[in-house]
Length: 297
Image 1 (cartoon, rainbow, N blue to C red):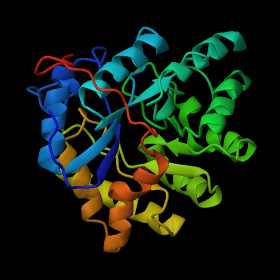
Image 2 (spheres, one colour; image 1 turned 120 degrees about the vertical axis):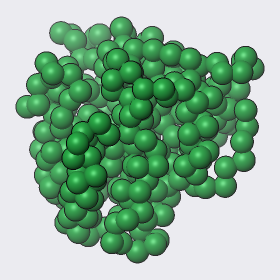
Image 3 (cartoon, one colour; image 1 turned 180 degrees about the horizontal axis):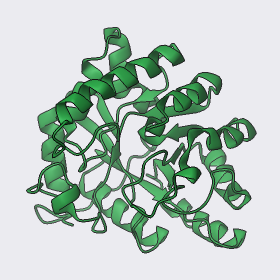
Image 4 (cartoon, rainbow, N blue to C red; image 1 turned 180 degrees about the vertical axis):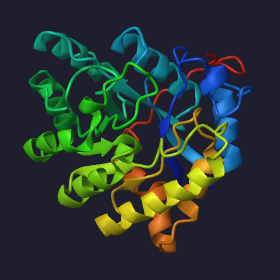
């Protein structure tokens, strides 16, 4: 499947994993075609050309999560890019062993960390090999921020202010605050304003569509996001993300399209910033032939 999608819209926050929790209840609708083919069809309908496949914290191991993402990305023939993760353990060597495997994935787009879901701060010294590797390979480090889908998550680990220390220490690493730090959006905006190497994505700002106040929540999220843009004073380091399958791609896009900002700034958020932050690998990812619909949950 190689559709011609003229749009440069780029979704930096997509999930397609067999370990995604309870799709029937957490997906934005119960009948999602949760396959590579289904995701690309939704991207086509929304006018999205490219996206990142982020791991989920429920994955049994970083290696298995990356293997799955790479397979899906190759099935997509380059429209989707894989993202790696690592879970800080009791020893630094555990992290280093995981990092050492990433050289085998030339199309790797970024690294995702899950503080809050896992009990660690972004400034945990055990993560030094991750940041050093990211700097060497120029890979952005995406960090979960704010609310967690898991009820046993610990929010104290996932506040934007906890990223400030590593943003200052590793100025040559680009950090992305996922979910704009929701509910600490203003705090996240301050980090983006202060640190030229910090970005934020717009995923995870909306409640589940089943909420009786969903429409009102969209209006509130737009107001909050508008305030964040005003605080930063620039759209240059804001990235569109949907958090699919939690949210419909079109709904997440509309959140950006209805902001009171200039057309050029909307284009930056919807794709131009991501195109610069996540450039394709020089030779392009390898493609593999698969049966139609490959990549099912």
